[in-house]
Length: 152
Image (cartoon, rainbow, N blue to C red; front, side, top):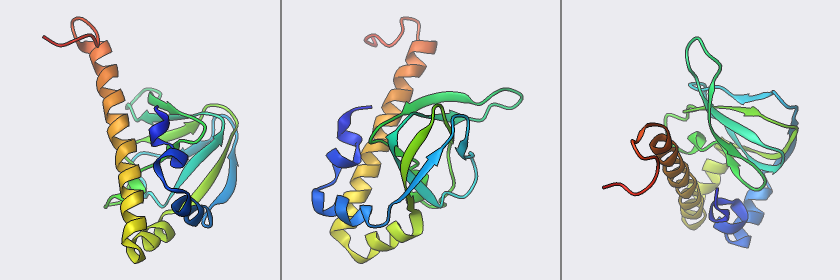
């Protein structure tokens, strides 16, 4: 993932400071599930150390990893868009230290300050767009006749 989607790159210092006032330090052991696809998205995380795999449920098989995120990256964007349910699952691939945020509290801050809310929305939108692009590249690598090279 590009650094443009990290919180430090995407948000001005003033907004980062406001957001960090809501942060709570948490840790996850390797193999711990952060959330499951389809469940209520009531929080999100910024990874401090470690790696989190984002995965998709595959009936009868182990979840398929579609993206890995690490230092400074956002884990979870479903909290920002109704109906606030996870579109994927997430698992700590190594010990993870992260900042955890209460989604309702952040949405309330966004509602009371339009400029802050817009900055958060643009940041989350950039993350979603980047992850969709990365998924497209992976699908081309898997299924296109000539990989992710140029399309003709």
